[in-house]
Image 1 (tube, rainbow, N blue to C red):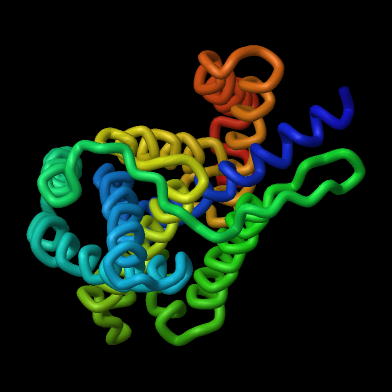
Image 2: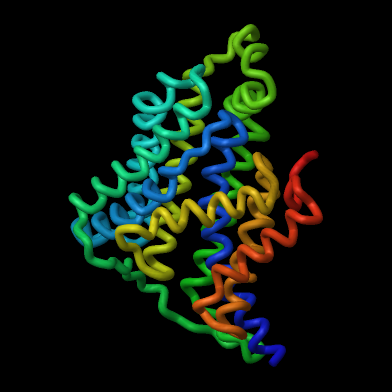
Length: 286
């Protein structure tokens, strides 16, 4: 029984780390610019499809293909910010909300036209399985966890240790004051969206390798990402990490010991229970 619990927790850490990467992309946009970017899940699916495309057509490995997909994702993020969100930056929030919903449908439609309706699984050479104390540790799941935390570390260093990061934090704290101090808000906004979309593309690639990608999956990922965002605390990067892992482990334990049909229900029940006692989220501020 104990071994089975450890097995399910390990599986949950893998998918939870993917949720964390998705939520981190949402966190940097919402926490810094205050935009609920619902199209983020669809952008993530674009990253998964592009990783599959680059791997199949160019004959390159999984991680180089994912890196190329992240680069394209960053460019998509810049275009989305410039063409969709920047014109309504100072408009009522409902405008950005409606645009986000429209973007979701548009990006989903582009994915469907470009890549078709078939389910896609990204093939990788990482098929080994290690046995550690009776727990089966799949090489791919381990690499997914390591990749996710590497990306989290890179973003944390970018925001906390670089000049660009200082500009991003200044805009997040007080945009008018940041403008008066000479911070280029347009540049910061473009960087934030490029980072967010690159993270989304990476998450889509990891989902495609770990599970599968298909039309409609992106919307589910966006919902999970916002659930993690709320569970961990709005705008909190450490909260996104903890929330993603809690949600992933909860889902895995529910699927393993109750039924896979109830895994989403159990995961969201955990979120509701946490919010009943901590409305600001696990690591959010009051």
